[in-house]
Image 1: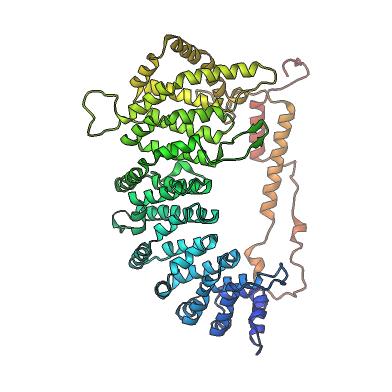
Image 2: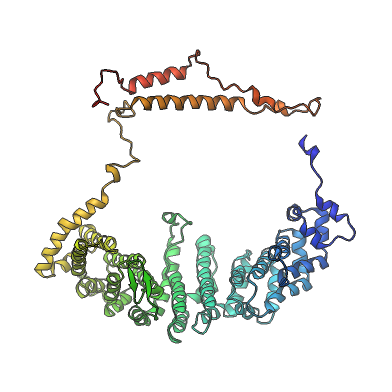
Length: 626
């Protein structure tokens, strides 16, 4: 059999040497494969404490500066792969040997900034220890003085952020996980991460701290979604959802001066707290899992606390829309932007979109009083080529149009338009004059297109979406009566402009946008109503018939080839033949010929179909018929 010819691994030869070194083994290409295959002699060699110390040294020690870049991190990389190959013997030695743990975690005693590649090796090794040897590893971590402070000191390195998340996620035992989360909460992990989102810190700290908080929120909620009633309280998530925690984050965002990096990353944490949907699989947003009643109740409680913490700071976010951090002039293909919109205002728009979805009474009242939609619409028309902004504004308007009436203790049984939802609709239609601004923008675009070198403005597509959303809500929305009242309350001249706009330019635009390219749907295959035939009569040319027959011949050749090529099971049986006999000459005997004198049933069927489907084009046919 074929395994009789298997070659002996070079690892065996190397391990027979008395003076074998670790580097010699690491130079061998098969060392990782043999290690994962738990080669007995190799595991015995690597399991020596002195060898394990050398492996740990490779991943925590900076390579010499004069080392060639092509091999500079070769040995640290191989050492990391060996230590994380998930071999039980190596895991036990690394997890239970005090000197090895001390040596490994001494990497955190280095001064910032850590080597990012070595930090990733270190994080990966600690991750395998937390997974396979959780109890001794966690006991050691807790025994180190201010371990959390040491980790946070290096949080500007993304691999250390990964290490922090491994502490939260890698421990699988329920009781042990609860102990870890309680310990992290007692050490004020959440508050210390928030303190790093501050203008006094570097941007790397802002980004990694915010990302850590967002991941803790999502992972903790997903854990509770999965376990449902059996899920234990998550102390880190409870701390994050507290009103006081949100206020602490906002204090760092606004009280120490405005920083774009702090604002953007702070808003990302708020958006994670306000997320009311389960994340969908990547690339399949329509496949987001449904929330159970228990999930909804838990989310409602957390989101409500977040909104209470936000409510006092809404004027600060409104101020950011009008007075963002200073930015330099940006040159674009259509001209200069002075000032550019900036990431700050875009993220404020995302936050407002998330807040409006919650449809909270007091928040709606505050946003109406702040005239928030005036600021958003001003930006919408000022930055006509920023589709990211346009999308957020459209979502905000769509949410307000569709939100149901909020129920409060002051809501009366009779229809009332003093609730928060109706107030913000009143602000949108009356204070912001939404309909009139749409009409003016459409007319301005018409004039602009007729000018020399004029073209359609970049926000017209989103403006069409807004208009269609208004009409859709008037036709079948829950707020149809109220929206009609706003329109009927406009001056007669504006009402006439609106009716004319809806019936003419907008109708033409919708018809044009819904028209299929080429006049038909290429994926639609029509058939006769009676179902007796699969296709309508199509005037194929004679060349089409010839091509169809050629394809049929190729199909027959392929079938013939597949049937004849290859070997039977008996070809592999051991036989008393000289090794020199060439068994691979069989391909020379393949028969590619299709015998023309043999009429198969398939060929008869093909001829029948051709005669019934393809019209004859004789010499008498007119050119016009062709």
